[in-house]
Length: 200
Image (cartoon, rainbow, N blue to C red):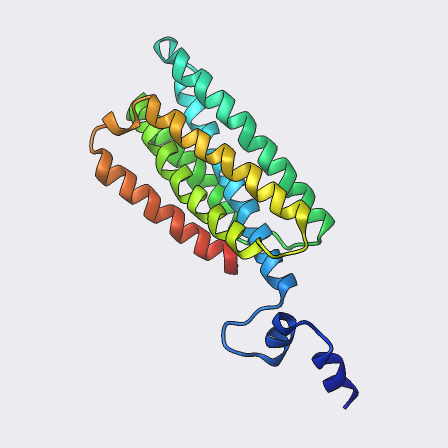
């Protein structure tokens, strides 16, 4: 009886999670999942830019593209540093997929850079489109939440990701060979990575 009273005193969302209703999670579990997947996404983004810079950073003719990428990479590192802190402070288990995202992110960045500057920018535009949509969903989910720090982080980082996408489009992303197919494949891969990282 005492346990039932304690459960009924909890918020409705937390109660649904405790009572095991289909698909229901406590607020804490939802926030942990958000931090886990965002941490993974920012790690993957840093690795993509590192792969691109490993190629374009060594090409004398790609100086402008490399400068753009370095600027975006610095912001992604800031994002990652923030999520590193949140993971520690809130005791969130990082995704088990980090070793995969480490290799996959770097490979995606390097391969698209080898295809040329426009393909590297197409990669950035596709990735940032998915991340912008992802953060927008989190903003909606958090609009009535009391965790103002986390809401602020998501809003700021979403604005950064949208700016990265516009930078890439302005730099000729849509002129990359096979842009529609390349963009669709990268977006699909990112969405799959998000779903996996939310759970593992």
